[in-house]
Length: 285
Image 1 (spheres, rainbow, N blue to C red):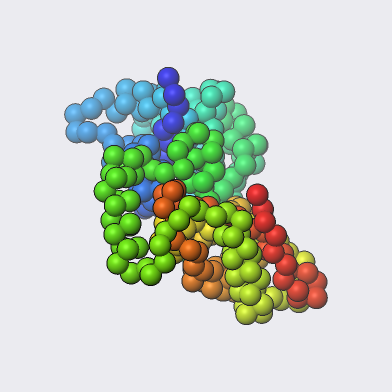
Image 2: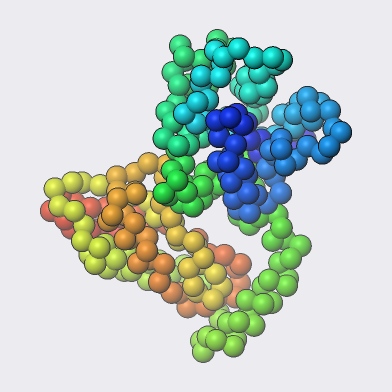
């Protein structure tokens, strides 16, 4: 059985709103692969049976951790702690990727702070999702999950609708783009992307006195317009800074010659700031 589903584990009193928003965004970015109890358990279903079944078929478990997540382990309760049961089962299975997802400024608990049966969670690399950089951070998480679960670069809903969508894109390109689409030219595309990133870095005023580097991923539609641009890293030197935000904003205007042989084109560059404020850009692939 292929493990290509994502299970979201969370505490309702701690992060229900953030978990629900995360489910919606990951469903949009990855396709129909994301499970969350409130949305995906039908009235009348055996709650424990559904949870157990999902955990045996999922490939990744996201432990959504907010400021009050850890406190619940020591609080009096009636009945089972389902979060603890979910994580214990996930951590005990070698085929499951467990990712702590930190929201609302929460920190990853240390092993001594956790119950012994889930203490190994502290050794897993966490991903922070900030409210002010939500789209960027979730896009990074989705990209990492897509690689870990060996998912298609396109969400599942795109496949059955692909012919219609591509036809609409082609029609729009024919109506509004004077240039006839041709095969995607990666070399030319990288030359445009590198030059644009360098000019954007200069225009945004790179801060002097600090060395820094960040990978930037740009995704283009067949029209040649930007579909998405974000920092392809959980943390990097100027992500979330005024300079970093300015850089992403300016790169949204990059245009490539239209192409007709791939549905999405991805380009990754590495942007570096030298101590003297000089911006350099290199191809990251």
